[in-house]
Length: 109
Image: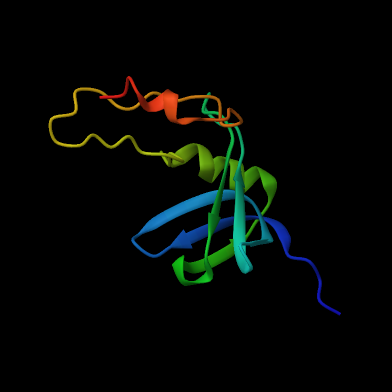
């Protein structure tokens, strides 16, 4: 019988990146992925990030307290703003549950 993988952990990713939080397995688009739920730390809102197995160098199970301490020490952001050459400001954020239609893009730079 396969035991469901769920634990607090520190996850090392290729590219010398580390993330920490509650780790579990989840199928996304027919592929098995690792889900990392990063807790709220240092005033930074909690977020979830998914990784394919090819992106992972190692997973170190640990206590909740240790995972939160590591998460607090890492300045990992779920989304990086990217400005194209000549773009004066980043595109606006919206409600992630909001439905978009073609008219929403008319006033974008």
